[in-house]
Structure formats: structure tokens, C-alpha cells
Length: 167
Ligand SMILES: [Zn+2]
Ligand SMILES: [Zn+2]
Image (cartoon, rainbow, N blue to C red; front, side, top):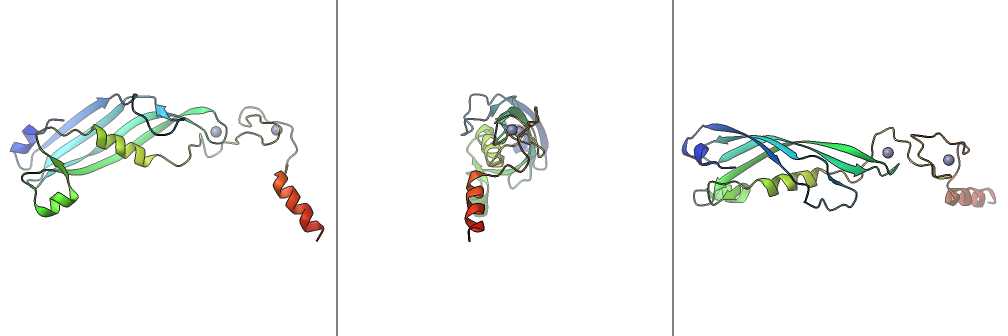
């Protein structure tokens, strides 16, 4: 992203529409990968103090559901906002709070990737209603209702119940 034009004029805003292929990047979890390019729409505003970069990040990930183990598309929609300042011109507070630039190029790719990683959930679930796999027969209960008895109890809990009834 070249900000030379914005830099020269205080108050100026320029829009950027970027599409980046992140598919080679490792998201740190085996079960997740990029399914679509990353689409970034940003506006860069020269506030005279710094470059205020704001916008949205859109992409799709392919993830594996933690309950039913099926893969599904996980949409990513994030807001992005950062302040970038030229190192040579930055005031002391900007040196602490802003991201620093040495030239007219903002290399935003790393920063965008970081935002996506930070927004990932701890666990991917295909839908809040996902019934998962049957603990008894292992069938995907979203696709095939099985005939296993309702209320089949976890063997550890069954042992506990038995122990309590002996009391
Ligand atoms: Zn699922
Ligand atoms: Zn079953």
C-alpha cells in the first residue's frame, strides 16, 4: 500500500481495495486453512499527526467442526483500525502507540494476518445446533439419527452413580 499521495496532503483520505492470497500462510492449527483470498477494504486518512488506517477484512476459512468432525466454511469479517506514523516525524506518544513507517510503503499484510489469527475462536463449531457424533455408535447425528438409547450415560458418570447408590 503506497501512501505517498496521502502523506503530502493533510486531511486527505484515500481508499484502498486489496485482494491478497494468504493460502500459503500457516494458521497454526492443522484443521484450518484459507479457502478464499483475503479481501481488505481500507481508507487511509492523513490526520497530519499520523496515517489513520481503517476498514474491513473479509475472507473464508475451511475449518473442521470440533463436534461432528465435518469440514465447513468459516466466514471471517473483521474491522481493522491502526495508526501508522513515520518514525522520523513521530512524536513520543506516537512512538509508543502507533505502528512505524520508514518509507511510503505500508506493508500491511503481516498486520492483517495477525488480526485474523487473533480473532480465531478457541474451538470451531459448524453451527450452534450441531448435534455432533454419537458417543455410543459414532454416527454423525446431524445426518443420521441413530437408535442409541436416549440418556446414554458417560461410563465415568455411571461409575459415579453406582458408587453413590452404594453409599
Ligand atoms: Zn458440526
Ligand atoms: Zn448412536
